[in-house]
Image (cartoon, rainbow, N blue to C red; front, side, top):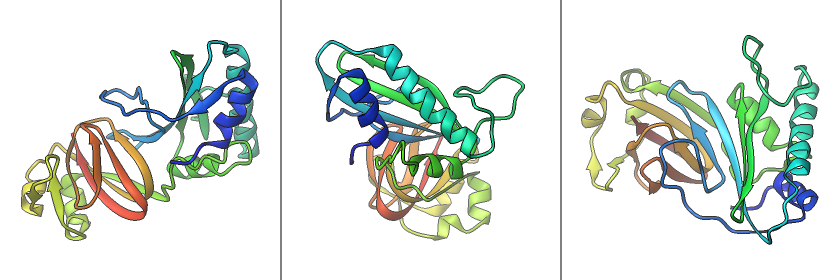
Length: 220
């Protein structure tokens, strides 16, 4: 994945040198790769993750830089000039959920009111996030996905890579299906059960969708 302009700029503020990053093995959204996170209700978040060298990180400057970028984006999109969602208030187009710099890894996690806001924030001059190229994402229960024809759109495999039929997939009524266009690492709130053939499974909760491809992932 390419590096994000937002974290590169934030890293400059904090005096860090950035390199690569490792893979996540956790079910909660505590990523160690840049990714888009998808919950069962269809809400989306994103994470930008970079490694750095050296021990000196000005956490205050880092936090302030990222907050300023989020506030500017929200104001430009007609929302309040805040960086975090407040209980009882309308959900902000983008919010800074957390930012950490520890043991050589910097992580910034953002929440969004919609996928459209994620895409717009990714494309801002402050951000220029090229860690994902997701252009469309829908989440539905498996029964609704089947009724909409999603399960007729390709060949599927189980999490272990063996073939899976549409009948087998739709038998799990409690599962959710995510229909994705674009590319990047996509992490889910539940374990990946089935996916479109050709999609790379990185761990129990994460897949990589090739740039420009369409994918269906079933998770629970």
